[in-house]
Amino acid sequence: MTAILRAIVGRVVDALRDLTPIVLVIAFFQIVVLQQPFPNLGDTLVGLVCVLLGLALFIHGLESGLFPLGEAIAQAFTRKSSLVALLSFAFCLGFGTTVAEPALIAIAAKAAEVVALAGHIENDVSVRDAYALNLRLVVAASVGTAVVIGVIRILKGWPIHVMIISGYLIVTALTFFSPPEIIGIAYDSGGVTTSTITVPLLTALGVGLATSIKGRNPMLDGFGLIAFACLAPIIFILAYNMVA
Amino acid sequence: MQFLVDLAVSFGATLRDVAPIILVLVVFQVLVLRQKLPRLKQIVSGFVLVLIGLSLFLVGLNEALFPIGETMAAQLTASNIATTVHEVVWTDYLVVYAFAAAIGFATTIAEPPLMAVALKAESASGGAISAWGLRLAVAVGVAIGVSLGCFRIVTGTPLQWYIIVCYVIVMVQTVFASRSIMPLAYDSGGVTTSTVTVPVVAALGLGLASNIPGRSPLIDGFGLIAFASVFPIMSVLTYSLINSKLTKRKNTPPQVGQ
Image (cartoon, rainbow over all chains, first blue to last red; front, side, top):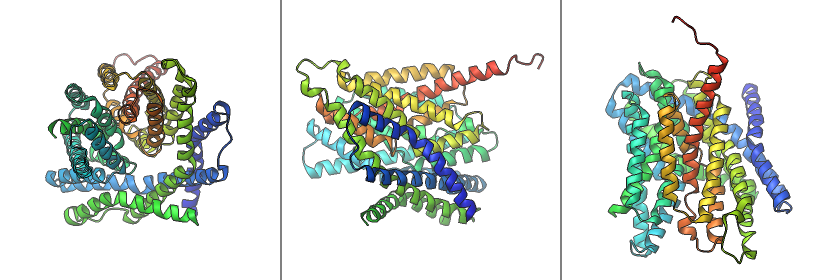
């Protein structure tokens, strides 16, 4: 128990270092630039303590729980050596983590609103909701597919840059055929769909797979799953808007 | 008391977000893998720590950072406009660009998913890539990206041209980059924009777009996240290039006759 406590105290010190820039930036702009006092200083301090403790616990749990979990699963799938099982797991993980992602829910609702205002769909609550829900399902399926492609890449050792650059070319081509209203939303969606829990799990899974498969290098092959999961939503939102 | 309620609500929300992941993990563990995971107890307690930590983190952000960050974004973007009778000139907003760069850098350093990837990269590369170096490189990328994104909103120039030019730069850098950094560089685009950065940066974009005449928050307010996800790719590729140059100089001269 004392070992855990000591570890967490160490993490709090790290977290303090990680949060110093934010505190400095906000204090500087509040006091020097805007020249205003801090509103509710007490609440802010209590909040900062929560952020510190939360970050420390999160990082500790990451190293003792999430990373070993991702690696253990990667090893279990390699031992099992069933491609179908591994790929369906990859799809479910990508789909499952994205479909309920709050950032995606917000983006889908915004996209429906923008498209309706531009007159591409009827500006009616039920039509907008249907558009938003379909969009979420499409994006979640696209992230699932992207993780599957990323896992196949790790297994085969394909070079990542060829695939990512092809993705960029597809995005560029689709952009030319898309209305300007949807472009901003589509580009933004790539960054927000990968959440705080998904990223460590996907990273550990990728590195775990690359480590346990013979002939694969964790640096060369293990990373990259997140890159695919970020590019897919951009492509699919642009394409969905064209089809719908 | 209110605090405990907030904490419980946040814990519930985190649990709900994580429920699909837990479901997928449990279903595959029970139906497909059917093997006992090693160190199961430690994994479960680690997972619980992650959930508690994330909830505390989010409550704290909501209490301390987001209200002040959002007010600040609104005040900074509004401060010039009351006196502006002339056409909007991009130099009216120098303070906003500076704030965007500073807050982009600071929130990225505090971004938990980036810490996770940086820790993994350090261990997977056997220490050749330092977690701090990677995080600093990514944060510098986000700072430049968000700042340029604000400039774009002020000038009202089309987002796609910026992003496509960025893609071209990434392609050119890819030609010169070492193969082993590429996957990590491409990944770093997606991990930067998360829990801490998105709300503050989104508030900044929304504030700018609604305060500048002729900009619509619905259309021009977007795009900052896109900048923040593309620039780290460039900055990490640049970082690796500089890093390898420096190491080469340190390990002078290469062995002859091997």
